[in-house]
Image 1 (spheres, rainbow, N blue to C red):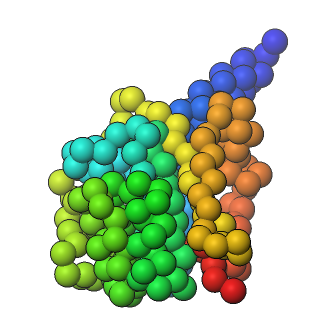
Image 2: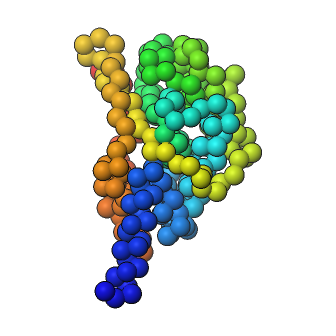
Length: 229
């Protein structure tokens, strides 16, 4: 076996190890730190920046009492912070529920309460829906706002600023709880944990390969779960 083959096998093993712990992004941050991970009208992130901010958010949520198995709700427009919340929950064993911004405050409150959210992250442009969700979710004591202010919400940026961006030492793969459109009544939550098999399959983040400069165009609206007809 050549030295190159040995290095390739070691790199692949490391990628799978990180993926199984919900840390695929950390591999990309180490491999292509300055490559663009998110490009949007609301901001840009390199892989290094996205990974660091996911670590900061992970620590901020833990500092506020959340841990593996706890639920985080997300009401957010298309912006980099959406991805940060996804990657933070994936590496801390938390259960993420994105809530569709088309819903009313009352409908969002039902989902936030039903999923057992202990934290809610929302963007300021969706204040009405976010306020309704926050009021309706008993036990949701952590409220973070992105891109502005919402009464009663803590600044997302301030929460991240106080934390380290270094990779967390004890990553745990997280999961999601997505909601149906509720065609037979109330929306129904479907909990999906991240298994080692699915984690290994997602190592390449949609088939990207390092060093190629590949980009992916996302033409759909983020957060369609729970869409009302």
